Image 1 (cartoon, helix red, strand yellow):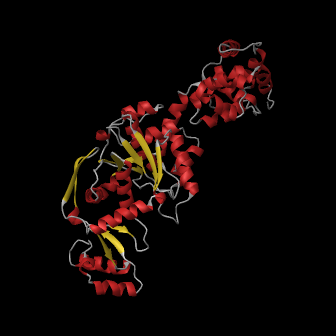
Image 2: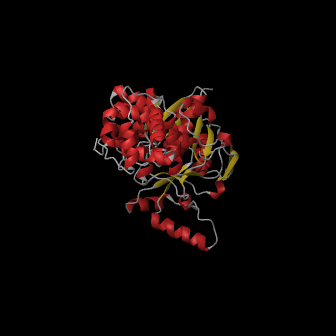
Image 3: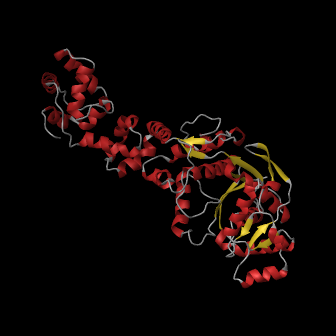
Length: 447
C-alpha cells in the first residue's frame, strides 16, 4: 500500500524546530516507501490564522527540502465536517451540553474534593426537552460532546509498540464549541478518512487523542490509520518548544545562517538510536529513520549541537554548492574557488566567509609585534607569481635569516598580514592577498 502521510500545522505563527521533527519524520517516511506527503493547514481558527503564516509554512518546508504532493485547507471543508457531525448526532454519539466554563470548573473542583476523577459526568444526557429549551431561552448555545464508549482502545504504535488508552478515564471530548466552530479533533478525523491518510505520525502529546479519534473513525465507519507517536523536542533545559520561541523558529534559524541539512539532521536524529551527525542528503536521512528505534525519553535540543553540525557541513561543502552564495557575498568569481578552499575549514556558517574576504582584500590594520622578524620578512618577500608553496618557501627563508620557528615565526606574520591572531592557513590565503598588499602590510600600512 502506498503510504499517504500528513503534516497539519495551524498557520497561527512561524514553524519552529519542534514542528520540523514531525514534518520531517512524515516526509522521510513517505520518501523511503514511495509514498506521498500531504500538507493540510488547520486554519479553522479564523482570528489567529493568517495568509502570511500560511505562506511561511510553505516557505519553511521548502527550505527543509519538503515539497508537498498534496495540499488542503480545513477552512475550505467546513461543510464536510458539518455532514460528519450530523451523522454522529443521528447515531446518538454527539450530544448537546449547556454548562458554562465556570460551571464546569466548579464541578471539577467538587469531584476532586470528593476524591473522584475530574471527568465530565454526562449530566447533559439527562436534560429534558424543557430544560434544554430553558437554557436556549437564556441565550445559552450548546457545545457538543462525543459520547465515548467506556472501553480500552488498543493499537500497534509505530514508535511505542503495543499502546492503549482506557477511554473510561476520559471526559467525553468537546468537538464543537458553543459558537459553532470545530475543535481539532473532528476535522482531523474526517480529513484523514476522506483524504485516505494511511499513517499518522505525530508527537506523543497526541496519544490520548488517539484513543478518542479511533472511536470517531469507527463511529463514522471509516478505516483506522496506522499511528506512530514520537518523542518531542525540548530545549536543553527540558522546556517544551512553542511558536513563542522566535529564535528557534525555522525562519529565525534560516536568517541566522544555518544550513537546512543541519536543522534536518538535528530535528530527526536527536532522540533516536542513530548518532547525531550531519547528513546532507534527504535520501540518506530517510534511510536512517526507523520509527521503532526512537527513544521514549524527551529529545533535548541544544543550539550548541546545531552549531557543531552546521560547521561540519560547511567544512565538507563543495565549492559548487557554495559558489552562488559566495558571489552574493561580494567575493569575485575569479577568486571564489581558491578562497573557499582556503577558508571553509574556519567557518561555522557560509556567510562568515565575508569576514575572511575582508582579510584578503582589505582594509586590514596590521599588528607589527616583532620589528626584526617583519623586516626580514619584507626583505625575503618572493616575487610573483605565488601559489600554494609560496608560504612554505617564504617562511623557510625568514627562518634561515632570523632563527625564529614555530609560534615565534608564524604569529608575528599572521598579525602583520591579517591583523588577527587566528584564522585560516596562510598558505592558502597568501596568494589571494597578493604581493602588493602583503608588502604594504609589512610596512605597517592599512591595506
